[in-house]
Image 1 (cartoon, rainbow, N blue to C red):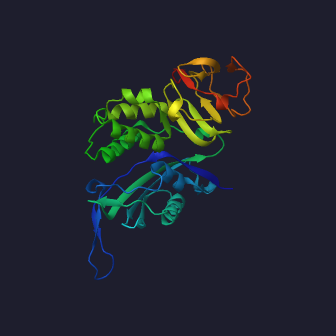
Image 2: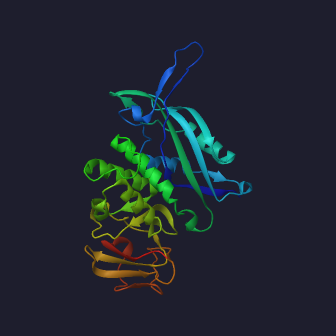
Image 3: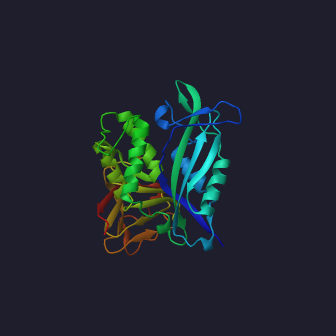
Length: 319
């Protein structure tokens, strides 16, 4: 039986400028780079939706003998939003074929524009896959810090529309663009960054470091059994209002070295649910059928915690 694949949080957009012939005797069409256009092409729903589209249904044969795989693909987003010139630059042949077929069935993108007019734009996307085998750890494997940094740098360059040679680029002054950048990277790396953390970020490097550290921290899932939407929490949550927490968690993984306390009121007040992982990793398989025992304790066993979390305090560091 083949394994089901998931695409994990690694979407980098590179570009090149070129001209391509549309056919014999036909004048070449201009293909622009992202740096040349006013509006960057976008998959419907953004980067997170693209990752989901590419990963859904991708399968790996046992004979591939791999534990992870990277596929680098290049394509042109046309003025009508269709894709053409789809090429695989790098990747296992089976994965590459499936990714190419996926892109061939892609819904229409929002095209890139120059002065309001749609144009052809070449994009190059490397996607890192991790194999969902038996344990959720395969789904949530930590991405190398250099890859995180490069992902942050490229996304910063795209959103700020400026050359970003390194991560010292300052993101603090323009709050609107900083928010747009953080939201895009949250979807890309499946990290949930608190408002308090957001206000403290000064440079792209600060953001990259926060995202990298969050990958080794608390991981929450929207469904039981470590399924559904995945978010790694970057820091405590003083108030879960406004979507600053993963609403209605289904399951959670707390790595060794952490203590997580959930509260029924903002500002770390009210009844508590404590998950103590100082001695070993703790996995709560279901918040619907929550088992209060061992490393999991509460001040009130009558609370439906899946619906009652209003603030989250995270103490400790990963060991």
